[in-house]
Image 1 (cartoon, rainbow, N blue to C red):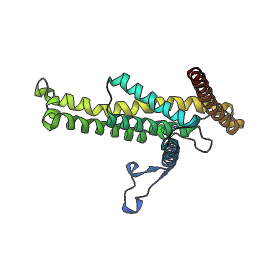
Image 2 (cartoon, rainbow, N blue to C red):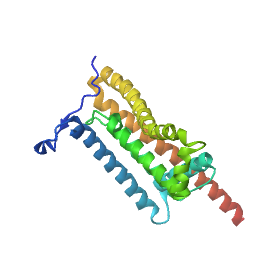
Image 3 (tube, helix red, strand yellow):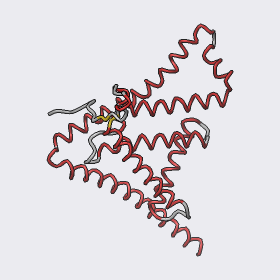
Image 4 (tube, rainbow, N blue to C red):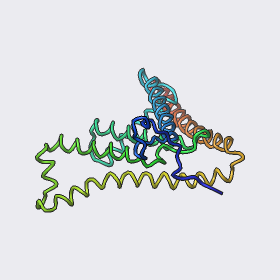
Length: 235
């Protein structure tokens, strides 16, 4: 049983300019997986806008509403307030990461986009820069720099290293979680290698069916209760 890790198919698009080092290599598997994840995310958003643009009706529209409300409640419980701009950034980053992880279960893709350390570093760097921008916007340049010399200026290098280390911390934490899940999933795929495509299709069908059934049954209960209340009102 062999599991290939850290082995990527690379291309060197800048080789003609003499840039052939590993830094300039592009992992083609990661690139394809990222684009597939973005297509899935754009499709998810397009369907949501289609159902929510007009008056929401049906199970799908109800499901989208429940997702939005669930994230709003989670945000409020975590931060004890609600900031629309922060909410959009956090949810956007969550769904991008989620779909980057999800593409790994597709039969024609062998790696998750987040299974590449470059992707997780990019996500953590985006979060880090956004946080620094919001700190400067909230406290100004003077207040932002004052945090690095508080309580005494001698601690400035320590504060700076601690702040920059958050990039590596977030990147390796996400990468480690995805790597562990990827190893377990690859072990399962090795065990059911002969039936990999139908097995994956079965898991997807079970997942989608469970979600649709739960929302359908709940939506039917709501409609049943509304009918009862309307009947009581009419009488």
